[in-house]
Length: 614
Image (spheres, rainbow, N blue to C red):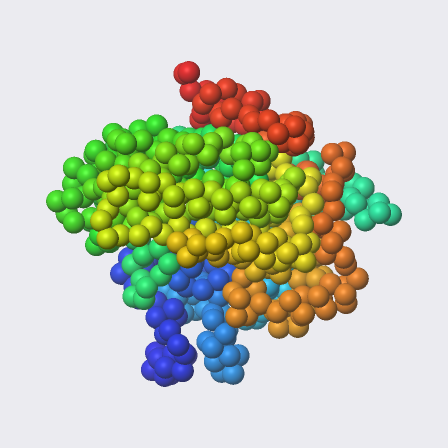
């Protein structure tokens, strides 16, 4: 399609900048001079995908090699999808506007279970068969990585191979293997059998699943030389790990429109609901010199005037204060602001507040997660009410008047008393503000409480727990609302239907592939967007497939049951998860990784916090 015709079509949509390409920092190559073309697909809108750090890293890494051209692809919003289908425009990559069905690889990053129908829609828009078994030629290969790959079974029928863990090394190993097999004229099957021998690569077609009469899994059997257990890959030395010195700078506003600088991977804490805290173990830090150097290069090359430090718990970074000193040494002069997300309540010091005063004046965000000490002990949050109130007092004394608190609803063993504790804690924070003798004159306090619904996830101590039903989610939300009696506290919470569906797919097996396909064919896409989500269509898909969502979401699982992900190894052992689940039900906490090793299994990688000199 010529540029003039394309631009005319873009005038019919709400945000043409999502599809135009040509941004500063985007990489154009001569397709005749590369061996491998890789379409990096983000199954959501441009604004969300362009905010994703993993895409920025891999886009730059792949393109740093002369033989690879990696291009970006995003899910078109409903208005542009209609234009594409009406005008027979196949899904294309932003850099070249070439149809992705002609590429060597179509790679999806799976960040959220509710994006699965978008994956199918993108394959359909590309003009490709949805199922892996129906795509018989060597290319394009449909591959996927990201956190959802720790249980990829619900979407296994549609993907040729999955990358477990961190992709910087394993992705390139697969690309090199593909180049060899393309040269030899291998079949897709020959390539996939060879790929399955690379550590961190899971080829679902090489595994047969058998079920018991009660619908639980009886066995997972590898074939054609595939390994019985597939282990995730990690990058061991973060200072030597590839990191881009430039980002693509979008023309339109995106969700996180700034430099994102990673400081470490993993988390020492072991909160029992948090999947990321377990699947990214062990903690591996970058030195403050490396972080400072990389952040400065990105600001200079992109022109961004804000840096966000990225990790699961930024204030747990051991060099946080030296790092802030280094960053403030040049950011203040350059009018570059800093953001510190993911701060812990229990290590928020006066010194840190003093640094933050130089950084930003917006409200502070903390995550107590539960309203009572009993429940915080159950989830291993290791934060006391006194620490929460002291932290808020410190912030108020530092001039802050807005605090945002994140909580979860539906946690294992939760009672109405725990829910009331959320409202009571909010009220105590309000009272703390007004009890200060030197509170800011003429200012009032605002406490925002955000409540998400607990979803049991694989590779957490709560992977065995039932999720509460939709009806019970709604009842608890209404009860919590009734406990809040002041306008100084605002409450927001998530839709119960999407949380329940996320709970189904998080711990589902391959039989859910039929449900996803039916829902997609019924018109389900952008299921994480309230304006697009259609619960009735999903209910019908489950009914037509003869599959019970309650079986996956609302059932207590026996420790001895074979889970759909038990043949995948993320370094954290099932034995450890069982022990932690039992400890949770005894309302006991476990020390963090720097205080005491709890023998989770992540020491098998030979790196990180497990081997620091204590």
